[in-house]
Length: 229
Length: 229
Image (cartoon, rainbow over all chains, first blue to last red; front, side, top):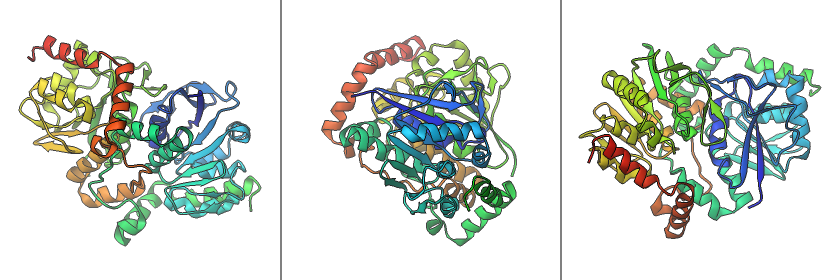
């Protein structure tokens, strides 16, 4: 197997499973090196109350075979961060695979990397893809040429196995699926708005309105400031 | 909702998704505090090539509502670490829920916390539970009184939702399942030995024999040294 470099953007407020799920899978691509990249090597606080260490910085890594952008409440701050966006654009311009999980696709979009591409995102943010010239597609993983986008949070695991099968073949992906015992059996069946039903969707909307009341407006402002309209 | 404290053991060589999967879910129990605990606050290297920061140390946290032990190649080293085992025994003796993911159940067993309890582990390590007086049960999540054990790696997500439903009720768990878009759709169907088939199981066994040839003997030695026989 030829070596593969994988660069994840790590940022304050990342939904850590958006990153740690696919990082677990992709670290087993075989001859693979996973980097978590941010502007310094200081610990980066995640949404779950603990911090993850970057392995390197924007200055030290300028290209990768796979670029992967996770999502989270920090995405609009990333969009407004010129260093971060310059790095995403730069690595994204030459990466073999330009990828995201959850609302990370909105960062790819804000970097101009999804114009004219089919893409997906967290179900509640799906429509925002069109702000950035992408074509929203409802699917767990969307491949369009070398852009590969995953749905919300846990979709990152399905995304990573789909990408692994494409790069290393199904036999390797099956072995790693067995190693990670990925035979999911959710004890409840509420993982999409359709399955959850109206009452649960309303409870979720209420929770989000309390936690981040301005997220929608912030995203539209960010898109406008970056010249999308 | 009453506050709930959740303490994960973090250790060198942890399979990071064993921890980060359930930590993502359980951080949303509502009024929950997640701690990652090790002997110092220095970064702890995981199996995936990046480090995670402990939030606190053995000296600073002596009890928790939920104790959760992840697994990984570092488990036998943890079993031989007197500080770590004393902490696991101490917190485990008073925790409302004593839990594990993957081979973390073997650490619980080595701490004497699974004697006479039904439990599960990563499929390839399942039989080792009996070394420590536990009764191996093949299931994604096993509840026995206040012991809750999950299967290999990705089973930690199912485990965490099952525990969340028990503690906070199904409505809350369904809302968080929707938030994390946990509607898994593996692109391949190879997550158990039965589904993977003989050729993939043999390829996995060969890989493990190359990566960690002495794991089985090390586990038996650890059990013997700790007085299990």
